Image: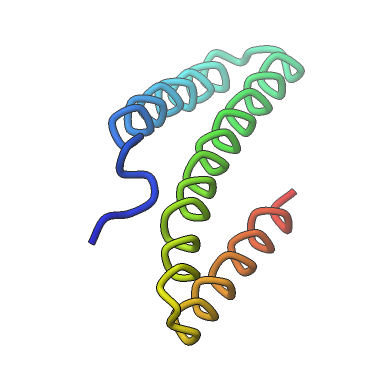
Length: 96
């Protein structure tokens, strides 16, 4: 099965590795007793970066998985993908 993010997989993995480095940097900032606002600024940057990855994956899901289900003519599959999409959007926005 091909997922909607397949074409962007290498770029997404690369971005996640950079974000992982940012998180490790945050850990070092806390260990080094850095200023609160500096840490919060970096946390915000990590959150923004993760949001960007999530939106890229969501775009791929809509363009590939949801569009494919709608084009298939299979009402059950289309309904399932629609529900998945709405659930993902709710989870994504609820976390804000």
